[in-house]
Structure formats: structure tokens, C-alpha cells
Length: 110
Image (cartoon, rainbow, N blue to C red; front, side):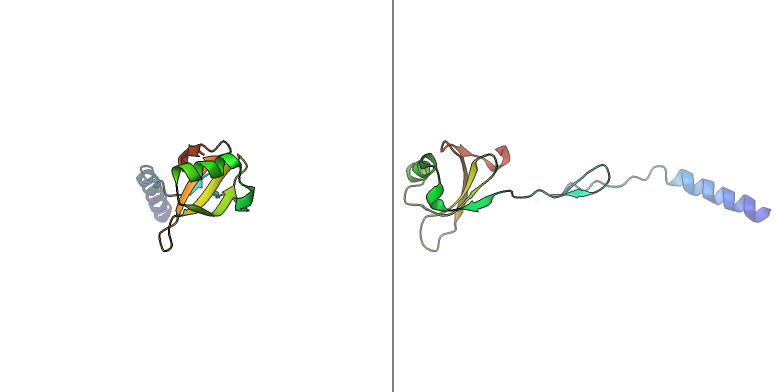
């Protein structure tokens, strides 16, 4: 009987002690759903041939990035183009985004 009372007292103490504990939220790149399954942001761009780019996009590159060449091109389901530009040999490639009208867009606006 003494052991039973002691067990209940310990269990009750532990119950009250853990009421203030909460998990820390991880705010890194992954998001969690209500059922704790992880959602990972995916890059939904599909590679396309640079020759199939709209004329407005290639004209915008020629105007705003004179001397640059488009080495890679990708397109997403919203007709946003992800372009990899190279300006000179050995220089770091630059990635830019444009819509089908040749207007530049920021990656966070997509």
C-alpha cells in the first residue's frame, strides 16, 4: 500500500513538472504539417533548350546583360524562366529570373 501511494505521488509530480515544457520550433528551410510530416521546398523548374526561349526574354538579356550568354534555361509551370548567364570565361555564373514578357522577377516573388 505504501508503494502504491508513493508511485501515485511520483507520477502526479512528474505530470505537473512536465506541463511547462514545450518543444522548440525549428524554423530552418523545412516546414512541418499538422501531422508532423515534413514539407521540403522543391525547385519545380524543368530544363529547356535555350533556343526555345521567348524573344522577349532573350531581348531582355541582350539589353540588361550586354555581353552575357545564356548557358542554361529552365521554366516552371507559371511560365517563369530561370536563366543561368555567363559574362566572361572563368567568371561566376549569375542566375536571373524573368517572366514570358521579359520582365525581371525576384525569386521570392515567384
